[in-house]
Image (cartoon, rainbow, N blue to C red; front, side):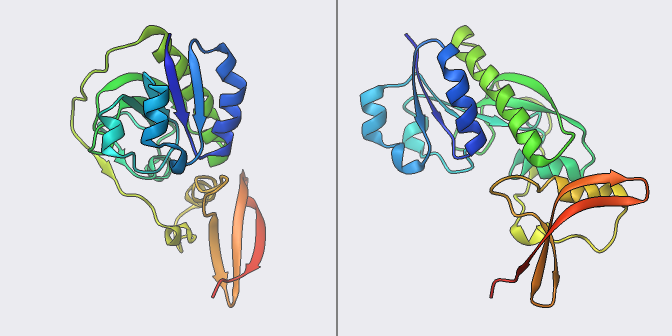
Length: 226
């Protein structure tokens, strides 16, 4: 019998797990914080896999060496290794990407690949992450049912840089499409939204929609943090 752990810090993935796990074969556990992912827990449960959908935290080397740890990266690796893949893809004008299920190794996003599946990138970041979550849990089910052997990555390596909150500031130049893309690629729960600063106020933009003569968006105005 397969034993598996899903470790995720994103609420939408927790919801998808709770709706999906009943169809998965084997014995399953959910972990929602790094404090729960202890050596005692792993030693007692002895999982065959630990899956990390949208974990965004470092996984300790001792765990990588103890069981199959699987992450899901939103690029066709080795293209796009590194941080903020969704934002880096949209900035580059990519409309469809590949989600890669990787066996985790100490080097970020460099492990061999179990599966790859296509993912469209239209809509808000929140929509894309939820769409990706549904795809990832389908991939998790496929992995535990078929037990594929991961294959080493091949081809030129491209590494993305992780974006900082300051980069959410709306750019001072560009066009209608780049403005729309900038707002939508940051529009997700737990992410810093696109913003402008005006005096002691901060204007945050979400729910962008392209219009004939511009871009419509919701604006939330708050005092700037000091």
